[in-house]
Image (cartoon, rainbow, N blue to C red; front, side, top):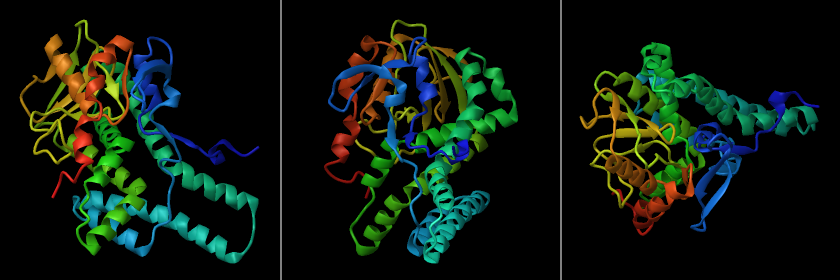
Length: 332
């Protein structure tokens, strides 16, 4: 039997399954909307997951140049971090090329290479999830003091940034709005699609750092929902609910209020706006309905709740902003 670290991870969740369990009412089963437009009740293990979603693909010199071009727009310390990760992945790619050219067939080498390609990005996300466990547990219990610890705060902001950028919803819509009006734009768009497994992690790193660096300018608030309407979540659990965000098309907003439901009762929000005060906020039913509506509108397929009644009123919003975008690019 191979060591555990050599076991290939095939099922890649782009929304953390253990996060979704908070909508399971003590079980692993949640209510969610399906691709067919129905409502199902099943295990979190079977939703927001795709086989080999984060699997590494071989990068050509052109792919690498496109990655570097996007990375250079980042602060220098993040650019250097991106390049360090990229070198690690390219070393694995070079090792595989050397092995293939040798014409040697070695089962053990094959197992190591396949595990590396399938598991490395998935393992990085798992490491972020692990650091978020105690923070999410504390926040679900309305304990904001957990984020007074600098290390906990930076880890949680990185986790939030990655959860925003790692989803299939974010990938599909980011690629959809890329312009393809010239040969160069087509080549860049194709390279972006091919290298998305790396770029999405890079973007998540950037967003997480930005959220942490701006923590003293933004308002970080816990939203407490004691109304009869519970919070729902979705296949894009971190969403921008700022009033400047279009509800009918996928486009780049000027401001961000990043909203992240933690349970049917508690949510976390990072605000550019002054809508909520720093710390705990008791919110009314109208606000819950608004936030749930925006959560559903920015979902691609799945909204998730603890009861069928919790998601039924918001089912009509699912994918609404992307339906218009699919008829043409939202960004020039």
